[in-house]
Image 1 (cartoon, rainbow, N blue to C red):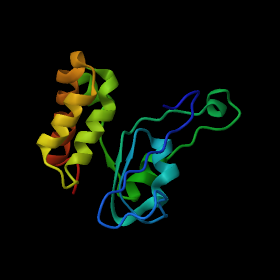
Image 2 (image 1 turned 120 degrees about the horizontal axis):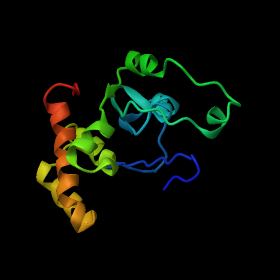
Image 3 (image 1 turned 90 degrees about the vertical axis):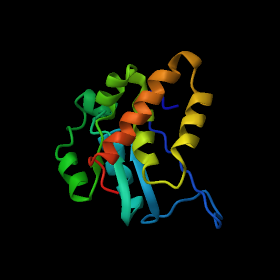
Length: 155
């Protein structure tokens, strides 16, 4: 979805009273960030009792890579002070057998805080990924869930 270093924002709202796809600052229950800079850019959307799940990886934008802007230091500490929960999605995805499944690891972590049965997540994942990747993606999902259930994530 993102190309040339751009970012992608996806908002999912559900409930009995969803009137707009627009999200106001301080109103988000769960924010999932695939890397540190995006987490820092969007943290103001998370409500005080909300949950911020972050893959602690930094993808530096092109101006940083070319030396036009300095590297931002201290993001881990800032996010940690804000209550971020760090999930080593890249590491867990490799353990699952597919480095490309880091997003599914984070979905597994997210699933522990949403009101959907685990079986529903498994059914959707199995129906949406290429058949040859189902097993690795389901392992990635389970590793993300387990990371939260076993205490990495505080619900």
